[in-house]
Structures are given as C-alpha cells and as structure tokens.
View 1 (cartoon, rainbow, N blue to C red):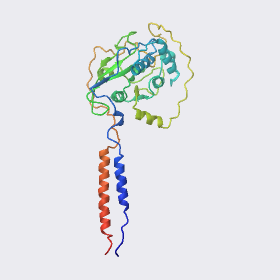
View 2 (cartoon, rainbow, N blue to C red; view 1 turned 120 degrees about the horizontal axis):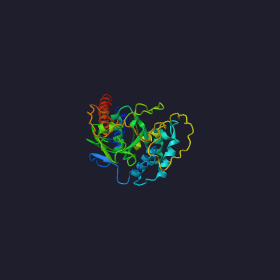
View 3 (cartoon, helix red, strand yellow; view 1 turned 45 degrees about the horizontal axis):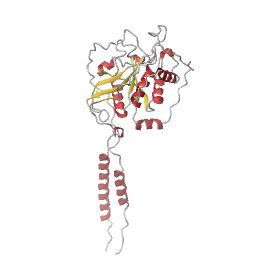
View 4 (cartoon, rainbow, N blue to C red; view 1 turned 135 degrees about the vertical axis):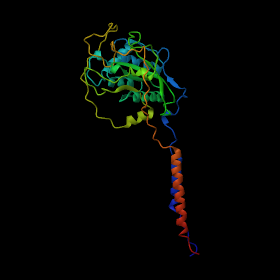
Length: 342
C-alpha cells in the first residue's frame, strides 16, 4: 500500500521540551555569594569613628545599635539622646517583663536591629559555640553586616564585626576560623576582667569562648537558657523566604512597662539591690580575665554549614542527555517495526 505517510511521533516534541528544560536550568553555586568582594583571608567592617561608649550601665544594647548604624551608614553618631531613644523603643518590644535596670532582652534587641539598622536580622539560639560562630562569620561575610553576641551569660552585648579564616565561608564548608574582631561598648567606662577591651580587639576563637557563654538569666527562666545567643543578618534570599512563610502564633504581649528615665550621668556602679541585667553590663570579680589567656585545644570537629542543595546545571544536563538518547533509541526501534509495505 504505497503512499502511506507516517505521522510525526510525540517523541520529537518530548525531546524538544527536555532541551528547553536543560537550557533553563539554574546556574551552579549559591546565589547569595554572587557579587561579593574578593576573598583576602578575612573581613573587618570596623573603621575609625564607629565606636560609641554606652552612656549608662544598662544601655549596652542601644550603644551596639548605634555603632552598627555607624558601620552600615558610615556615620559617626555618639549621642546619648539616640542611645536613650533606641533603649526605650527596644524595651517596649521585650518578650519578658523585666525591670529597667535589667535592660533589653533578645527579642527587644532583635526588634531594634531590624527597625533601626536592617530588617534581615534574626535571633539565633545555638546549641554549641562552634555552631554559633561558624554561622555568624558566614552570614557576616554574605551580608557585610555585623553580628551581635550576648556575652557573659547574656548580661552584656558585644559586636562581632570581623574575622579571619583559612577559606571563604561564603563558598566553602572546609575552613577554620583563626581569629575574630569584637567591640564592646563599655570601653572608656570600665575595663575590668575583659569587660570591655579596646574597640576592634582581635581574639582567637578559644579566647572568645571565655566570654561568649551560654545564656542564663538568674532571676527568671527564659526560653534561651543554655544556648549561645546571637543576632545575625541573613542573606536576602533567606530573608525573603522567611518573610513569605506563614507567621507563627504571636506570643502574649508582655505587661506594660513604665517609660524608663535613666540619668544622663550614671552612677559609678549599678545598685547592689538591682536585679542582674539581661544584656547590660557585667561587674563581677568572677568574670573571666583576658590576660593571661591560656589557649584551649582546638575542637576536633566543627559544625559544618550545610551545602547549597540547588542542583547544578551539569547534573541536569547529564540527566537530560541520558533521557534524550534513551527516547531516540526507543523511537528508532518503534519505527523499524512499523515501516509501510511497498
């Protein structure tokens, strides 16, 4: 039966579709690392003019906000009026009803950083020191924003604004942190047992571990007890995903707090009858001393930052090629069994 025409097989359209899928596959590598400055072995965001001393014993968190604004906005604000404004605003966002002398808790502190600096800041409670520090330096590198640390069991606040490492944390999980750069706002008012050292102090991770200790607010159990508390900036992609996620049920609002009216000229030391501050200041003879520092043995294992699960274009390309070859072979076999007879 001459003149019979073979209909176009659907396999051709399937092959074309697979080719289009391969062409549209995402590129390799984490998108958050794109556009970063060249890795030179470390990062330090500190510059001259950034430092602000806390104007009262309980304003360490507001002084930290002020310094981070100086870093991000390249400003040199050191006013007591702004520290008071940040402190009062954050106090109203505290999770727990704590006295004015106890300062600001991590929820209020996070709210302040998100409102006055950048809304990508997130509260992080880590189970281990290594896990907290590795995630902190990676996010510092990816965002070029400082991290804040709740030191001395949560009674004081420092800024982590620099580090050095054996490889770029933005592009590798195989690296060792060799040093960090920190600043505490108490310098100039007090420098005792390491609280606080001069601005832009360089520490090894073992030295930092003596100060960055698990959270414990003695007057009241809190949800962060036993964890390493930090507030870290997340990359834009992660921040957008977090914002798009369904909101969790809100916590009950804290009891109304009186508007604090701290004196512009603080007393020489906190009152002995005042409750221990949450994140304010440490004045304890039992606090760890910086000098001399006995280096600790390096940890045998580090908490690795998970690799980016995004599939690479090479993997998708190989899969596409294998499917195309298989479909073409199947098409030929099917065609050879249904040729028109002369």
